[in-house]
Length: 590
Ligand code: SRM
Ligand code: SF4
Image 1 (cartoon, rainbow, N blue to C red):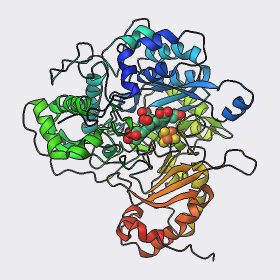
Image 2 (cartoon, protein in one colour; image 1 turned 90 degrees about the horizontal axis):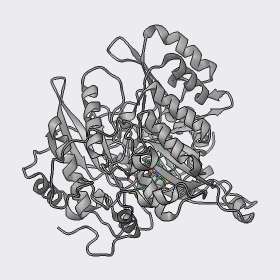
Image 3 (cartoon, helix red, strand yellow; image 1 turned 45 degrees about the vertical axis):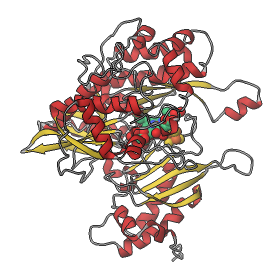
Image 4 (tube, protein in one colour; image 1 turned 120 degrees about the vertical axis):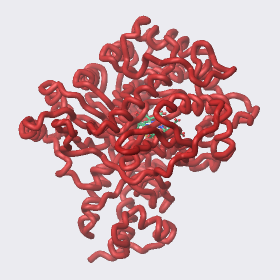
């Protein structure tokens, strides 16, 4: 087998990674040079340290008109393995958002925090503060193993606790080992970090292993790599969307091991047919002790055979697609030097968002609070930012971030219930019962104004779509239906729009009559499902923002009339056929 890019010339990013000398040089040269921004090379390396150089796109045109440089700022992603946080860590992130960020904290679809609006001169302070709270930003972005996902529910059934321990062990094993991150940001001190040491010995030694970075090598991976742990009856981490998935196999109430899924990834470029979303497929079964070995082997095969010339085709999914699963499996067996066990007959069957009050099973309670599109902020009477700070200052209990961009307050005494409800009410924070089902199950990526790749709005536009959908669904008696709606400002798939019931993907920018940026057009996808194990299909393309809900209305009407008993919206669209639905006329007004 040859690398999937063949003998083509390596991309520019490959040379930048090698020149960085293990993620050091370009940042060390530039992070204290007094400029407001970094060069493209340094910004590329900075991603591995967990930060993206961005600019405020709301003022980009104005700055240009005034002959000023862009309004540069940085996004800093705080790695939170399995979404587990202490109260002190929450309060640290909150404080940073106030001191160096834009007064908001954002929970991501991979259960991390993002700070937005950080200035370059504040990066060192920000990184050091995060490390002092025993968290890190290392490898939150970049061509490495990203944040490892795990079901965050604090249920004391032994199974989730064991799975969370496995996820932490895996994250630690795969963390980069070079010291540049600490050398630059925390003066060489490894202050301590739940995502990092101890990293343990290399389990799949190969001739190509580098002495400093034995898993990654000098050029790190060809592209990002993502891993998730999930339970069949609770796929809250969207395991099929990951390069590597561990789907729990439980026997007699005990976590025995995992079915290993490979090749999930959602990013696509509509104009390039060689790119497409793909869901992870079962490779083998491993017991709990086997997760590091199999994971290391998959990462190393990706390292050695991934496409290093064309970054659009550099994800693991393309190796599996190009080679076929049997050849990929044979290569993994070559790396681990033993045959793999076949996957067990275990598949994803349901999903839980863990919101509302729940018994933990140890006498304590958890409370999952819905955070619309993950943005913790104060706006009008809804003061999420202040309310959550007040909560953590008072109770000092831990929290968990979910992959649906929400937060779970955990380890709560039942006797605190009324008092906590009063506190949340004081800050206008709605509990899940007061949020519509469709809003509860929706997500949007940040898009404008921070994301450099956005072509349309998403986070700022979805609330309007939700208002309209709530009205439409209530009108035809579907208000209680679990329908997952996910919106992104471009086709990269950050809110995972390709495996849910209704995907709304930013397609093209539009302008208002006065020349100001308009709301954009979207591609609507239907026929995936809430449990995330089926890709949806294009329903309509280039739909103007204000036409999104009117285009969906006839489909809802037909679903209400023709669904089979117990059939979900996604299953209905899949059964009837998305193409057939695209031909439905709009209902005439009553
Ligand atoms: Fe993402 C790039 C935000 C989850 C696929 N993603 C970006 C960047 C960094 C834009 C950039 O490269 O300049 C976005 C920063 C925007 C901003 O202003 O903050 C960004 N991605 C996000 C987050 C914050 C969306 C959210 O609503 O929470 C998520 C952060 C997760 C985290 O904590 O690590 C986020 N991104 C995802 C997911 C979902 C997942 O992993 O479960 C995907 C699809 C799965 C996948 O990887 O295939 C995803 N992001 C992408 C891609 C397309 C990758 C590809 O293979 O083509 C890009 C573009 C790229 O890498 O070049 C991207
Ligand atoms: Fe940016 Fe596109 Fe990701 Fe949205 S989906 S955050 S617009 S890269």
